[in-house]
Length: 109
Image 1 (cartoon, rainbow, N blue to C red):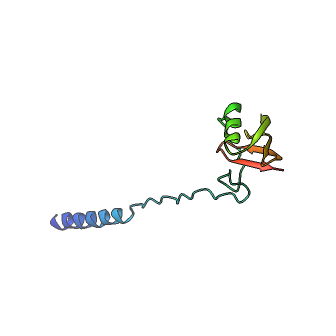
Image 2: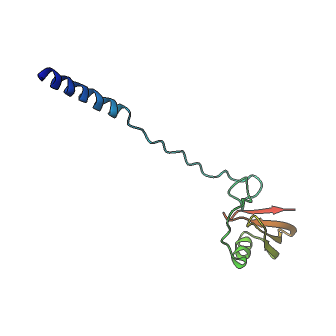
Image 3: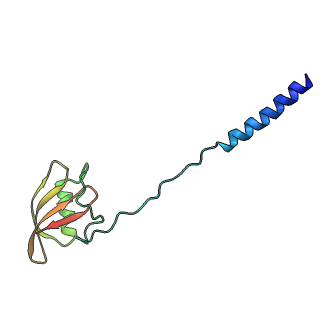
């Protein structure tokens, strides 16, 4: 009986060691900030405008666009990708402008 008990204890210790060896490590993915757009200083990402649920109202969208130096902001409409699109003037040049849910402003001549 003592041999059986001793064997059970040894197997229990080995089993516990194996259980600790299998403890999973948690890997946290790296968080990379968005790339700065090379096409517009008013955009935080080169992929802008980004489709997504836009919570800006028309008035908020107009104010954000104007705050970035655009004037004569007009014809603002939200498209089927929830991107605000319209016409504006920047540095005297008329442009089409887009505002996505992240606040990125993208001009298109």
